Image (tube, rainbow, N blue to C red; front, side, top):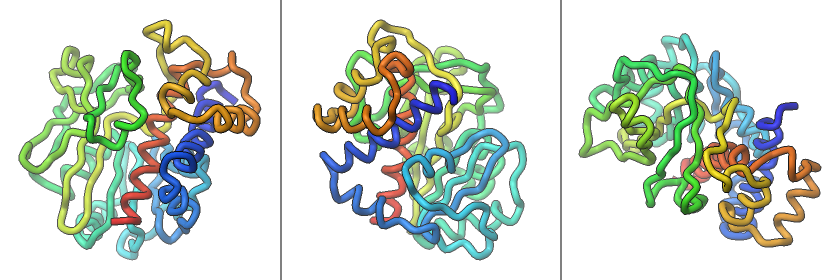
Length: 274
């Protein structure tokens, strides 16, 4: 098991503990989720289903697109997609569902199914780590640590161009992306009919992290306290449940994993409550 895999396991425990302490109504929603409510389309590269399973959220994998009924749909980054999915997803969203997509789904699915909103810039990133500055009103705003921006892993990723700034909300941006690719957007969301689309560059299941500061090099418990704002009892519970030693996972690893895990959990809650 890699250290990042351990970080994702800790992140799932931490998000659930944070909900228990700070948003018990969110945890009630998560615990009540059924596979009929969460659809995931597998991809060549990303694995949102792994994040969901760590959170103990049951899922329906690759359902027939014309029979979609789930209130939330995850479409992973992939090199190819089912044409029927592209043809049917917009109608499903317009009826009230939420779509969550990652990276290459931007050009293959999102820009085709939801024209005039966002598109790929036609540039491709290197394999690299960028810092992310979440919007203060974004889904990530509650786990931001001042002076220690979240790290987001890119792997031949597709930068995002906003076509309709009046309707597209920028959830997070990156000065690194702006400098390197003249495209600062990390995540966007927009309404479509009665539903909503949320797209993020790169993957929910990262394979690398970086330690640009001494803060990022610290033990993962530092993030549980500073980032998740968990109680001492909650932190001890997570350490006990995870069985991961302090020196096995650092602050940066857990921050990356928790950023993605928190996002997935929050999106599920909001889609069901919508």
